[in-house]
Image (cartoon, rainbow, N blue to C red; front, side):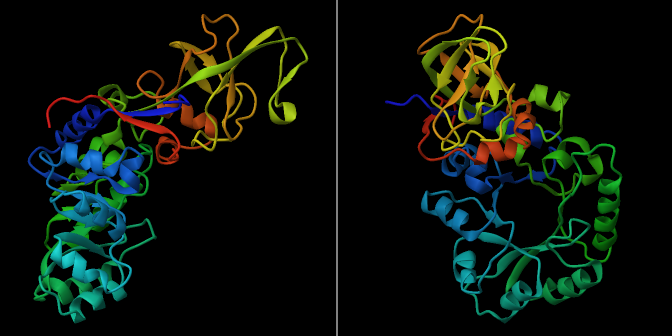
Length: 362
């Protein structure tokens, strides 16, 4: 291997985190959300690891489901956005794919199709997110249309929480109330809890939970919390120092000189840039670990490199650098980049070497 940029994925950590989520409602079911290439962790590897322990998976679209089926994953797969064209229904019904239905087009396509097998529908109610889903009145009509239809093998009442990560907001309580009011007229299995709902909102713990970000070891809540303390980070992004320079006060670093040295400064150039997926918008002061020692980003992130402060550190050419992972949480790095851990995880590009940590069990 040449360039040292490496993404290490710990599948055992993901299995551990799934059990943390499942334990919140052990008598109920929990789909493993593996959309967006399992939040950048590798959907096929993650699905193969979890398949013996999960009742099914959730992805965004049929392309993601096909990838898993082609890799031999057999558990049910839910399409969270449903299908986009009616011709997808043939694959859906033949490959045990469950589909969200959130608009009249999807509703009409199912009821007018001639399918080899009936499909399992997750009928989506808009409880306040205002992206997808039927209004309560329209939902009741759609439910009646599907309830006894021969093309439908089952219906799950589904919605999505807007603010479950904000524990001061009353919106989650309102959404669950809207959700339950429709359930009284349309009694089916229910699913509304995302990661934050699963971990912090007992009233959202219905028949099916849909944990996502927590599977990958990142809490959906800001700051240090007891959830993060129980999770195991599954992604570690590393590189190494490829050059060292001694600068004097007044000398600037990088494009447009966004960092000017105020004292004699020893800088390390790291083989990591925005073409690898490290955010260009990362600010001066973003935490970095070099040889396990905490330091900071100084100067602007460029396409292939970034620079860190090595002053006073036991570090030099070839020193190991952790950008986020086991020892430096993505949730700590993300605010320095005006983003969240989700975008850090999903933004890693293909030129970064990927490595699976040796795992036990499955």
